[in-house]
Length: 208
Image (cartoon, rainbow, N blue to C red; front, side, top):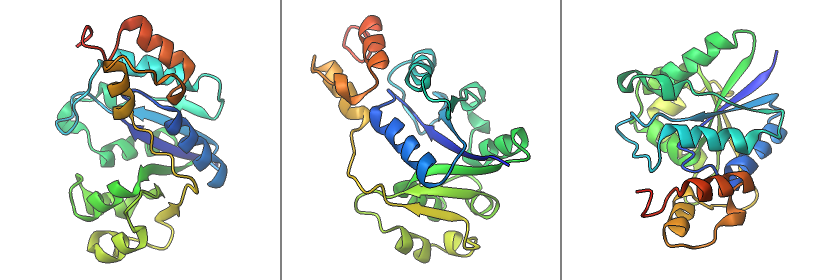
């Protein structure tokens, strides 16, 4: 039985922090595989800055040298009304029936689930397991204790709370801003992705 982490994000673009986070989680939680899951541009709560093809290509470029990393375009191929994390995890549990599936997320998202802001929030927590990475200013234990959805659906193994031990908060937004202002964010993202962005003039006024 393999242990598999599902790591969803916009990856707009993917950064070195995304890779470091995935590697850290795989090591500490003894995961056999981390699946990078770029979210759909069809989602109403997300506004992408480049098209799905470019985001997908950069994820593949970023993870190509790590055998534990895999990309999956499941959410990119779904209709907007079908896309919730609950359905997504059901899909992966069917795909990997003999394996343990964990959803990887930041503590800020834990708060949102606890507030009932995610589709099927109660069933999502009740039927799945989560690896939650600390975020500055979010008390994870307090977030669980204050939410009836989280605390009443936690069997003691539902949430694996992780503190990264190092503050690395380089954001995709920062990188996009650097490209748009003719800055130099080269070493904040994989080199192959940096040159891909340069080649296709992404995140610039010319591209936009």
